[in-house]
Image (tube, rainbow, N blue to C red):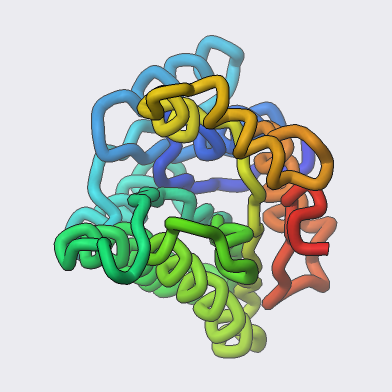
Length: 251
């Protein structure tokens, strides 16, 4: 029970890495505020409660200031405090610099960067009042390694990676640790949707696997385990760190 008596807010937690993290945190004793833009997050809350855990559904868009603040407020209203924030919500829009539309670029930056900023800002204000906390950003291997056809996404995740170090330095004396995970290619529903959109999904999946030196894709559960470590007291001497969980992609 690595997170016993802890309260966590996880954004984008209805599917994929966010859902796996919410379920793992609950098994480790945390009370979990499950956020999603749609109402699908309620199913994750139901699953946690059916297993004997405690959770609350917090619907909202991370890129909207009022909604970002309300996520933190809802977690505190439900459980009395906020010990852990996992900034997981994000979108992937393919494209290069020359063929990425302004709309797609701004949307990507709004969700992935502005959303991380807004929810973090609200969380820091709460954590400061209670004497500390932990923030874990879900960045990407794209933050440190160029990936083809991922211009806007790479730019956004590079910003999240940089924000990690800036925040870690700003709050190191206030008991707030800030770290990030950089997942490699992970077989989530989002990736499966993009693979199935190709004319030849089998060949497309093979290409994703081929770029992973380990010869396979990562799982949401493997990413959740890394997030758990950074969020737990076991990582109490760790801040400003980047944990690459990428199957050797950045060796």
